[in-house]
Length: 339
Image (tube, rainbow, N blue to C red; front, side):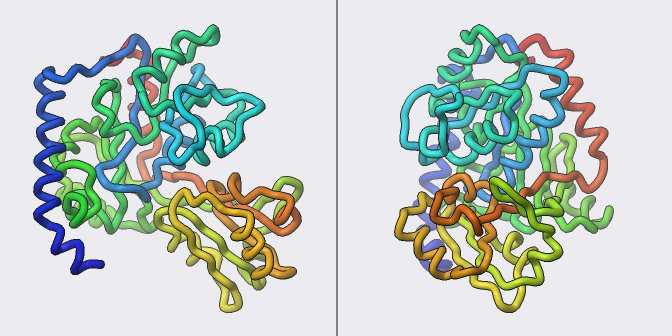
């Protein structure tokens, strides 16, 4: 695979030229970007998947929803529907996509919408009777048709965008210079004990004059299903089946795995068939099955009802969380539109 990616380097150059031209046309106003009269925060990355956008969106929801009417807008990746949809009691993961449905289930106080056309999605949200006061755009860093008021760029510790290459040789969706659009950068999935010296080294590598924060994955103390919960300390010590269909499942497996566990890996956003779910059940036999929160919404069936649990995660800042919160609250509180 590595050799093939190197052989495809000429295509990476071509892809980089195409995306750079597109960005140039937007930067010069030749292609039009649209802004709106409320605060819009875009959370995204330069690379393909696995930087922790979902936990970061959830962090922002927890921060902002006690003070403002919040809406999230996603494209609804791999959903079996089209156009604008505002989540309601009839919604499911197939209709919305797994991540938006997760937002809807966890945060009933907010509006959750999906639309591949973010401009249309925002317009539809603002036409609702219960108009939101702030909109969070999920995975919209490259969606230049909408000009957000505040851009949060995520990059993974150990896989920084400044060390990466364009697709298909690397994982970048656009040139590293796209990072200049960011109002702040969050280095995600850091070791909780990352030193100040290591943080300063990464800041120097990134080479951008914007606030840079460092976050880590914070796991819940319990795993849950629809009716009960289990202490994670007990889960770790017993034989189980671990199932994940996310971009980078290694930390999830390492956190829970014991010697007698079975591990089943699927592609990111995998749409589990009934036969695959039956295979998971047969593999588990009488053991519990632990999966990610994102996968749980697609695996939650009668077949696995009694033995399927999920482990929630949160984004936790290594330090300076108060500074991050204040920057976001200041933007939302003082910006009457997309400043």
